[in-house]
Image 1: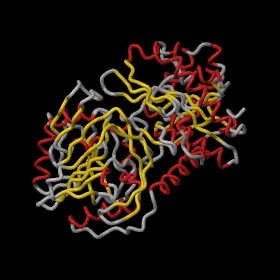
Image 2 (image 1 turned 135 degrees about the horizontal axis):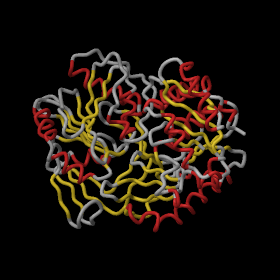
Image 3 (image 1 turned 90 degrees about the vertical axis):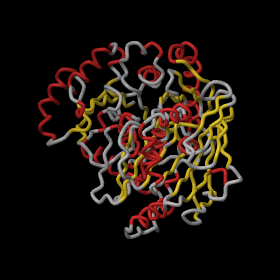
Image 4 (image 1 turned 60 degrees about the vertical axis):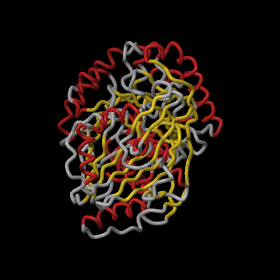
Length: 490
């Protein structure tokens, strides 16, 4: 198990690195996080919902992501409640105050059921477990579903990861160990220092002191890596900056309060000529080549906040001058004239809210949640095979009296596009992972480049999964060079 001294210490990526290293050795690693809290989701082959970070770890392990790798997923709604997902399916809404009272036992059953299911497929596996936050949150320890309880249940060797970039690394480590009970502390077999800048020899005195003070080996010091790895949570997006040297196209992504599936934009961040700039609703829009509205766990609440912000007026003026908009899922719903919530899925019963009114569509929420892998054919910017997945409530329909809006795909329900008289476009889709499609992504970028008078990019481009594999290998290479994994593989 990989534990961390805090949230954001690098647990998710360390699990991915270990999975890839063990896969290279011919072992059968399986990533597992008993409970995750995230709106960045993935849909598995059977239509089960899981956290994207466990899907990423599964790819690192060379296996197909399954929701059994993340049996309990909490999706925050921004109002002190979360949607509770067990074994890939939504089972209810929980208030933060009563979550452990009402959901602990059923959550623990889901975790044990998933473990047994995974073992039944292959008894020769090695679980690589990821903890959550810190293992010593005193107010949560008694009902903790995903840290020490799980480590003890599976008798896991634990690796404690501390992020030196945040400062106070010695206090992080010593404080965490001091707050563990003696029986729990025995599980910690190694300490890993993450994101170290400079020459590793400069930490040698610190390593010796830690080992002397704790009696636990420091298995390695992982250097700062310049690659832009997937963000672990929305906090990582705040200070996220582009790494590209040749920025010819600027993509502005509105960081909604309840943003979901922000991994949709990883492929754009990997494009060498693209600068992805994350915008808060109160920030200045600037002059991007396109504005992206991402998915949202609370579409109506985020729509209201955006409409009341200065950014909305800037976006309207931007569109009037020929700017382009592209929405995904909740962002797609916001682009329309109206959002209806007759059953109170996100609001009070029979709530109707006016949208941003950029395209003539309306959305109605329903109880059924669509969770499905999709393969279809795009109609713009060119006819092309395309794949992705859907996660959303409700459906969107077009106003048939309008003639200036066209379907984006052969399956019209997946999205629409409208070309403006000023030379821009306004489009939206329910298809998460749309930018993972390499050829389609390049054609989409070329539509922006053509308007700007830039040379067109080569469109014979592999899907993002190929780049992702190289990124995982880079991470695993650094891990193997700097971390003595054998010290914890007892």
